[in-house]
Amino acid sequence: MSGAPLLKRVDELGRATLTLNRPELRNAFDDELIVLLVEALKELERSSTVRVVMLAASGTAFSAGADLAWMRRMADYTFDENLADAAALAALMATLAGLKKPTIALVQGPAVAGGLGLVACCDIALATEAATFGLPEVRLGLTPAVISPYVVAAIGARATRRYALTAEAFDAREALRIGLVHELLPDAEALTARADSLTRAILQGGPNAIRATKELLEVVAHTPLDDDLVAWTARRTAETRASEEARGGLAAFFDKAEAPWLED
Image 1: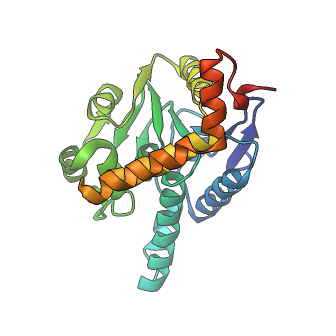
Image 2 (image 1 turned 60 degrees about the vertical axis):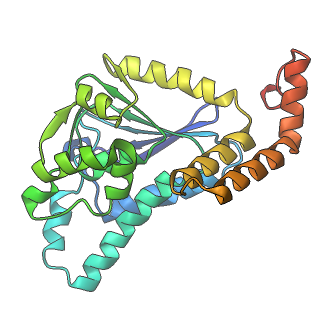
């Protein structure tokens, strides 16, 4: 075994990297890793120093989804045991997707089933040109139920239907075309370098504005465009303008000075 199944590191930029560390199992997750991920994400959410969360993986695969040994145990579970198990996985996806801090997925290899779900839950997804993806659940007599809200949000219902029903694997270029990933890089080194530049770009924004923007977009994405939504967005704009952070940011802009949150 390769040691701890989940590694955590926080760098000088205030970026936390969570690394799936079960390379001998293609970073497949089980009930233990799910708990560790949820706990780590909640801890990072509470941290006053962490501003960006990055999800990476050791070895050649990003994540093969569910651990085979875990799946064998599931076969003998009662309905209530399966429900509790599925609820834990659902909580992981919801926690990652709902994190108030920006998230970046670094996909250096295959991301399958729940692994693909993790990618879909992140705000930004970068992949190497060698990465592959798939939703193979139906070939096991299963459905991608828990990850489906996030996959549909990422690539749309139409593309999800195709790949969930055929269970075809698809390559990184197709993942880029349908919107699952945002950029392709030639290798893992380039992946890390691009993640660094994106992190620095995110850190130029006000911390409160970043959090408010994530909350705003989540509401807008799931709300019909009507008079109530228009009024709500106007109110959010007014509230933001009145904030101390916005006042400081605007003053710095007009004075051609550094924004307050960038000062040492």
